[in-house]
Image (cartoon, rainbow, N blue to C red):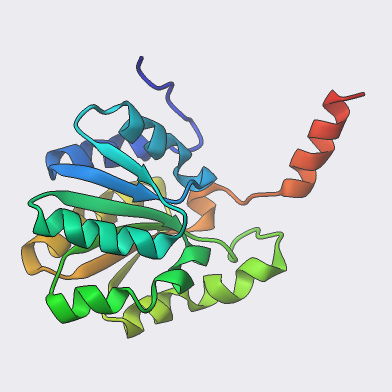
Length: 187
């Protein structure tokens, strides 16, 4: 069954096509609404293996193993998970292993949760401090362009690359509205 297109994430089909063209076979992720459309496309793709993680640093190790076993992968996560990866990212630096991370940002445009702001603000600097090449996408077209570049850069130069997908692109979450709407359904 073919996934239904998601108008909130028009970049997802093009990014999925880039992953296929780059021969990405493993997709490691902690489920995230910002990646939902891309996740559905990857899950429906018989040439990709989607691995749901309990924490993001598992994905760094999993994809290092995938590379050593002859397969390419990508890590999908939210900016709040970047802090979980700090120590594990030393593996990529020490061993010169490629890693592509697509990171949906929290704590910026329209954020409602104050706990997301510190890590959202620190994400670019934390990644850069660990030797990760950092790119930022603030539109659907930039997500596709930066992902294309990240795949080439990571796999041709054996280094970690992160594409930070701004909250303007994926949409700011507002759980207060979701909670209110859900309570109306029960009345």
